[in-house]
Length: 613
Image (cartoon, rainbow, N blue to C red; front, side, top):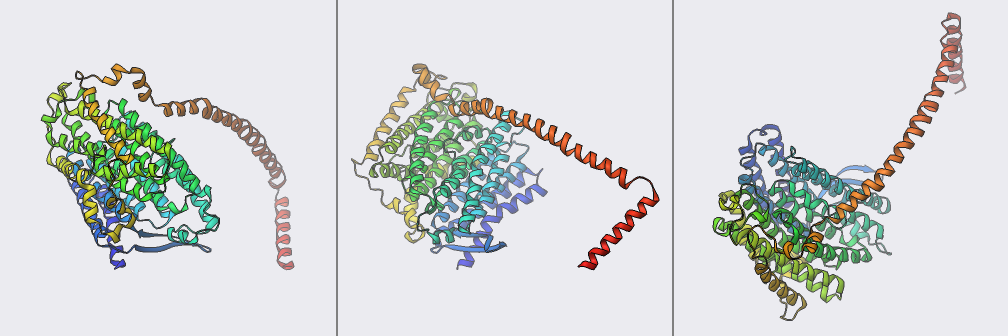
């Protein structure tokens, strides 16, 4: 049975790679064929992943050694356990629907072939992370995810802001990945293996070193946009909207959360406390900053930062199963929100400023219904998908006695309802604020169908469907929170949620101003400016200009003085020049008698060596 399932994993992993190869070699100018080939591969992978999710009770294992260094074995393989089964389904299912959405969204793009090839490469890369059975294979696919993300963000490479955003995402992620690769080296030198199961079996008596978990967590900080490496995520919205939905909401950014759950047994408890506080702070900050964004995609990007912080806090609280559960629920409703934003942008002739929208409820009813449903799930309305996981994490913080984390998560919950109500009011209600909004139209079926499935299906009933469909033996602790969601009326998380929803209803009234105006900016300009300002970008800019550049200039000066000046011109150039001059005078004088003498001396020397041996 395990071999049969491993063959299914082969197909799931390599179908996107095969599609990308065909697109790159044969279909670069055949955009329509390339797009449907990519969509077909994605839907076949989703079907196979669903089969593994519903039928597999045992872990899927497969491994092949590719190199051996002494006692150290390096190879590639699969470990599809409960966590991997859930992530595998989320990535393939949400990814397939986003592929279908992209068919309509990118219909007029001349570079469709390149775009869909990039999507397929990304799917191959992220699936490699999901099924990897060791840290080395995880790192290789981790870097492939970074490369494919760079390509997709820079799809509009002829636009300066897109090119700059792709470079920023690539560089910032490499900062985190430096710690990741150092963690691999530390683990290999200390324990002699990178296999997840072998590491789990070791269980050192003194506990796992703090440095090991901290170094590996650097990859999580970069990929999942955690403080202080969160600055790349909002700029990455420069890519096409389906890219934002696939990479920066549903799959790539949660790869770090999945990785931390995968290596959770390696993490020192003191590091988990830091992760919990940092994650809760990121959740509150991201939710508040979303209130001061006028670009619909950037507001959703800050929302993603908030939810990534919530997942990180769940990890820090020692509840990786809750982090993975929220990862799945978040993928459903956040992908819907990004796709809904893409549909709005498409219908409003590529307008992204929410202050220039309004009145789209009547002009785009399907998009509006899906977006509002996903927003309600985002706000954790009881019995919708987001409620099952988000309120469970807030409740876990209260029950653990972690007052700071619980307070910050409560701020994030309130902010979520505020910015969600603001978006609904500015985009779908009231009167149109521009000519583009007045002539908005509903999107084609390739864009509407994913919105209906994700928004009106999984965003509303994802938690209930998962609890009913997933057998207890399949996901074990991951599915358990779904069955344990029976909060009583006075539970702290319930009270926080009700207060947040009440404030969200107030926000609908608060933002009911004339079209093209932002009530918060009008009434509290100082607060709005503080939330709008990108403080960490300013800090990094100061560091680069005032510190790093000065250090680089000093190193360049020393390089010119010592290396180029002393070593090259005096030592490396002067000494060899002197020796060459002397050798020329001695050995190359142009005299036949001298050449014969040196040849005879060389023959005698070689003969002496051979005789004495």
